Image (cartoon, rainbow, N blue to C red; front, top):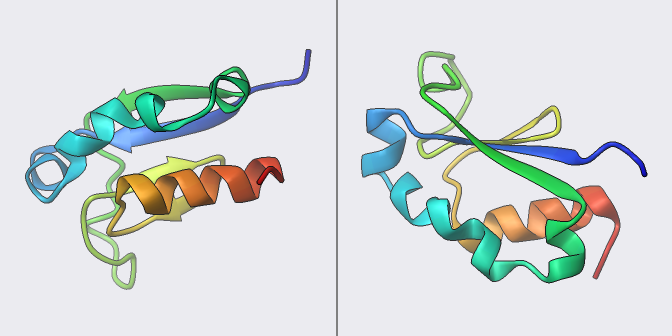
Amino acid sequence: MSKKLSVTICTGTLCYVMGGAELQVLEEYLSPEIVDQIEISGSPCLDCCNQDGAGKAPFVKIGDKIISEASISKVVDAIKEELNVE
């Protein structure tokens, strides 16, 4: 089996308050086929809010790509794009 795509949700205070709390149920919005291909984890801080030009919280890291102003739909779309699925 191939390596799973890493999806890391920032759970730091700023990200959590700015909408990251809703991202904790991300798996519920994905098909079982997609869930089998990813590994979802949390991180106490992705340190994106301290980087100029990184965008606004909340942040999610999908593979090596950072998603700013992350929402369920934005993250689902980015995961599908990374996995090349509809």
